[in-house]
Image 1 (spheres, rainbow, N blue to C red):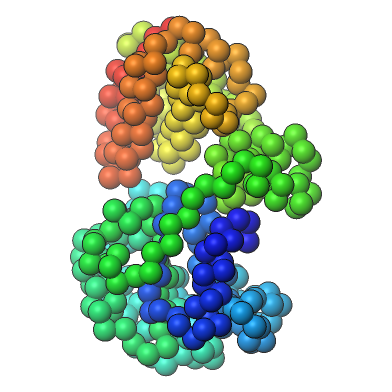
Image 2: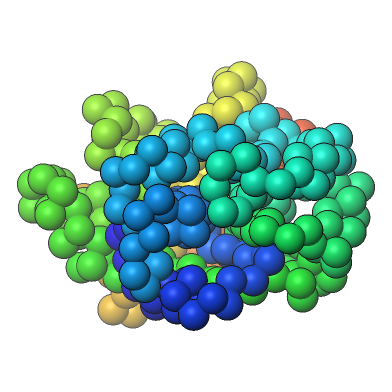
Length: 323
């Protein structure tokens, strides 16, 4: 587990003190470690060695199956992918399984990933289970923010809000895992302190190329007129799955440009794009930089709500400055 020592220690105290609650909600940005922490907690609850203070051996059959999300007493519920929703049918099937006694572990554990993607019907269906939890059942939910869920769901959970790690902490953890210093520094910066993102990029040999392409795309768009931008949007929206990571990459650059424009000392997410940031911040006023940043955030939120991708990106182009 990289980072979040306070959350690890809190959950260990619950286990060692016999004060395990029936529902926990892990919140934080994508890639910050919500799913990993939830799985480690599930392992600690069911580890066959019953290690002291809520530890995890990581080697017994239960720990290995939990880590692979293959244990018969671990029930993982999530949407089918980007843009999909978590439906009421999935929750009802989960309720049927949770009504049974544990098959071989001490607990039955429900892991509901990205619950902010749940439909209203699914959320309402879960409420009954949260209000009347079965014995030896622990429910673990993950979501970007608690505000995206029903207040009645949040109030019935122990909320653990995970934040991005300081760059130096993540950089050190990556180096301890074998990354070279330069690579670790760049990964820690680009991932904005999110261990999951950093680890996935470290394993992906093509991530650097894709990132450079996305940033070059943004640079090119800033020199285009409105008609040229709209033509480019048609091409970009042919691959909807690539839009969210592309916009997140753009958002990180706008944040860096805004920090530079404001003259703040915030660490950069794109230290290797110094020339781009220098050009943008020297030619674009801070008001326009903040407009572009907020418009990119709104576009990401719109895509989360299943907005039309082409219309969303065309609207975004109207808020981008021109160099």
